[in-house]
Length: 194
Image 1: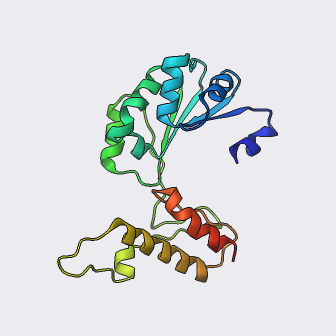
Image 2: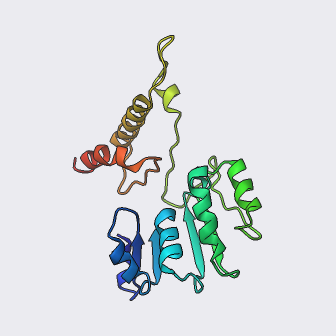
């Protein structure tokens, strides 16, 4: 999708993710204008193959709250450590917590950060409606005494709640933020085909 969106501008987009052929990434790294990738693959390209980030103007960290969890933070520090000092850094997420913002600011990656946030109680973009729901309360989800809550049960409940909402709210397009994309793809693909 990104490749299609930028092709008319004459920009080359490189997608760098683990599991893809490394040889292709090594060739693509010197010709792309926009690099999109996972921290691990980018670090591998930087350390082992000299991926040059000296001309980067904008560095975007999507799902930044997740990128600063222990499993990704080291890779993010390596990447940001080779960026030019004048780079503009955007740290975006739909699920920022206050402690994550403090951690990112204290890490020195953001310089003079400005926080931009939708007011959940206020108006969104014109023509855009937002919905948030506590699934457990809405569906009276209470496990039986002594029974633990399984993540799969919560996932199925979330999928059901979204499908129920989409069945009653008229829409032309919908954006759904979820923590684990693959769990939801099949359910929403079936919904889109209806």
